[in-house]
Image 1 (tube, rainbow, N blue to C red):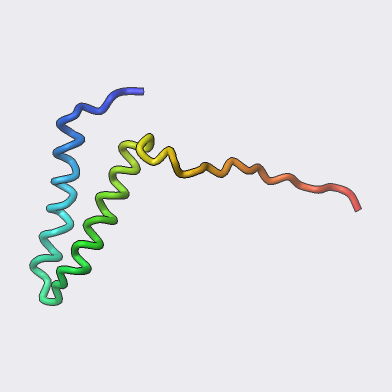
Image 2 (cartoon, rainbow, N blue to C red):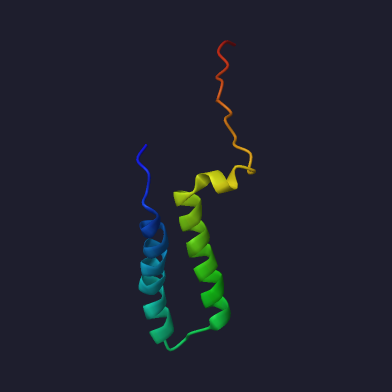
Length: 71
């Protein structure tokens, strides 16, 4: 697996944040409370995608579906 350069790890979330924030801030119905919540969800999702090892304390469900055959 190829390693992501550290600069991209810092720059890409900032770019995503600005792409998200500009329409929100220019909206006539801007609410700071919802903006903070949405920003946290956006950054949390990005961090979970880029660094899945940070959330290794969350158990994985690897259950397989078994089919019963017969009468």
